[in-house]
Image 1 (cartoon, one colour):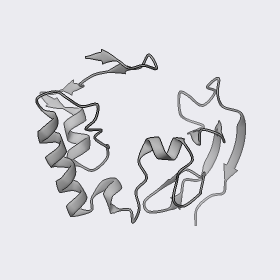
Image 2: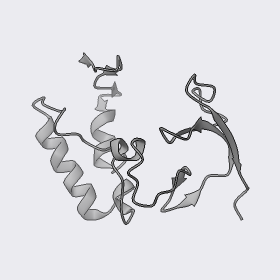
Image 3: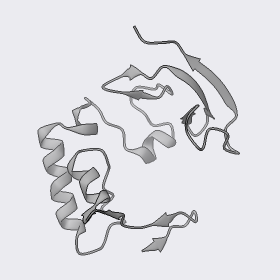
Image 4: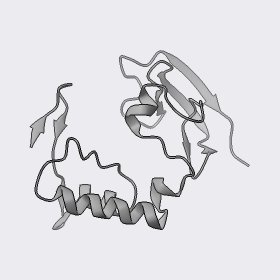
Length: 127
C-alpha cells in the first residue's frame, strides 16, 4: 500500500481469503495506529481492537501494555528491557539486541545479527 518514512513496506497481508492484519488485531496480537491507518477498513479494525481490549485478550491481557513506539523510546512503565510474554514470563534463550532501542532478537530470529545489535545476553531456562 505504501512505504513509510523509514523505508518499510506498509501493506495488507492476505492468506486463504483472510486478512492477516485484521486477524491479528481481532486476536489482540497487533496494535492499530489510527493516526496512520486511514483506509476504509480502519474504523472496523479499531472496533476489533476495542473489543480485544475490553475482553482483555492478547496484549490487552497485560495490566499495562506499552505501545511499541513508547517501548522503543524507552518509555516502558516497567522500566525493563527484557523480552517478555505471557504477562511477564521471560523467554529462555540467547538474545542479541540494542540496549538503546530495546529491540532484541532470539537466536532463531532472522534479524539476530542485525547491524544495530550491539549486546548479547542469555536468559536461563524457565522452571
